[in-house]
Amino acid sequence: MRRRWFGAAAVADGGVVTHEVRSASSGEEESWVFLTAAFICLCVIYALIFQLYDGARVTTLNTALPYQVLFRDLPGAEQRTFRQMQEGVSEALRGRSASGAWPSVDALAAEGVPPFAADPLDTLGLRWSERRDGLATQYLAMPVEPRQAPAFLILVVEPEPGASEAQAVIDEEHQGLPDGRVVHITYWKRTPALLPESGLVADPALQGWSQIRVANPVQIIEERP
Image 1 (cartoon, one colour):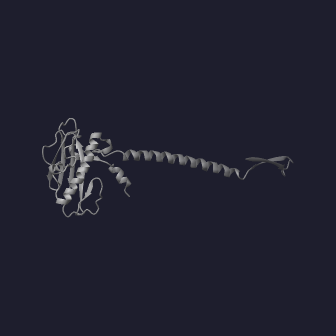
Image 2: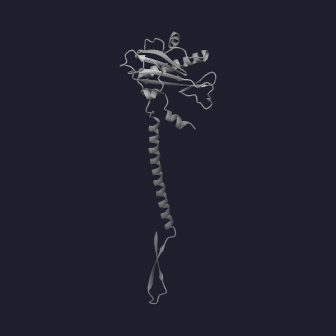
Image 3: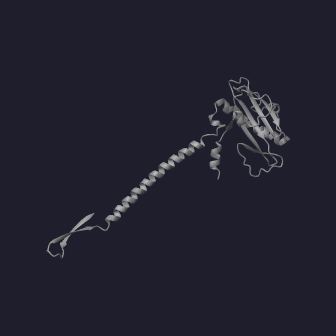
């Protein structure tokens, strides 16, 4: 706001001088308008950055590692097999706790434990066997028709005797034994072509297998305190 004030001034020629007087509040009003506009711009920038960052984070959490596949992305028949594998591992773990050794496929099948027992609803035609080598035990399933279904693998690795497992966490890859130790259990699938006739699959990830997981490991790391 600007004001004009007219008054006589003591000048030599007796003329009239015009004075311009600026309101004392005008500068403050302009400052508040500037600060408000700046605050709004910062809020908009912050919202855009947060949206972009959150979008990138969601993309990361929903993407498995290169050698992994998430359960939700499997075809229906393979999802059913994976659930049976989890059930079979639970029963095998009970046998391990009772006898001190992992049960054979024949023993589990005789007890009707899936997926080792005959299943009339099995559309993949899997044939299970077990292989052992030291602290590692694996249950391997080969399809009758290799071109129509993948092979499946349950890999069990026990800790060294006397090894401390105090820091181990029970999760979908680790299960506790009666003596307090923690055993490492993972589930895998791959095209059955060129699978070795015998011997343990020592490192599935390097031998063309894909690990099946229910939860994304990156998400688990993000959520842990």
